[in-house]
Length: 314
Image (cartoon, rainbow, N blue to C red; front, top):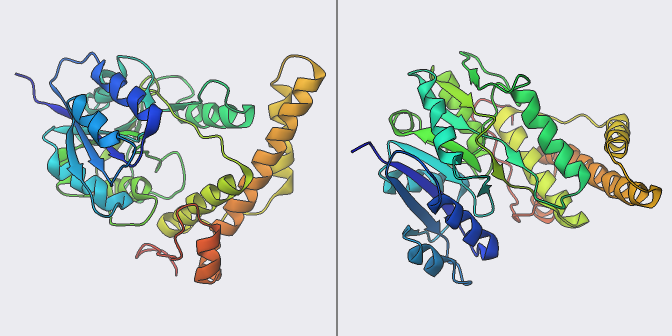
């Protein structure tokens, strides 16, 4: 029998989207046994019971952490490769897993393989275009991308990895586990794998449907958390640029067809999206200068700390 592959998902009150995720995993067509493992952090909406009904092995987690919980999932799973999803990242088709695993066939030193996100139907044009543009930039020719570097610098396409749609080779994880960081654990893992001399692969056809449409406050807080994580992992400080916001809004509006009222409405949504995102990014990447109470107020996860990696300035 072929060696097994595991699909691992951290869960907390996954709701209706979790049903879609688990069903899509169960529908995968791949020539290896598939193990489904869920780490549940105390769901109260029936997510734990749903996972059990669909044949998942459930690991109960008292205290969730981005890096620690994924290390636990690696420990409790059996697969030679472990494909990570989030509870709202739905495999785009029944070949997602098979395509993702082809990344490990590109070279013997591939430790990580990942695929793109596609926006959900009805997502704002700004969200859809941002996702499509970013992932298209990773593989302009539509072919798999392979990255190796002895001195990687990020954030950049060279260092990007996502565990909302990414797989880890067990042999590599045993040498280089996830860091126990509060955020950006996938970015840190990519850095550590590259520095250890391993490669990572991007598979442009191994897609999941995964996007968020937030209100103003939630989007600001999510952006704050993301860019604080980039500062903690990479030392990145986001420059403030009103022109960047303006150019992105214009590009979004130019991409639209239809009547003028719809273009105006979507243009206003785009302006809000990019302005709020810019504000969260600029402040989050300067979180080291803020008092803990303000960091907590700005954070979607309500985290008050700033915890830079050992190799970044504090």
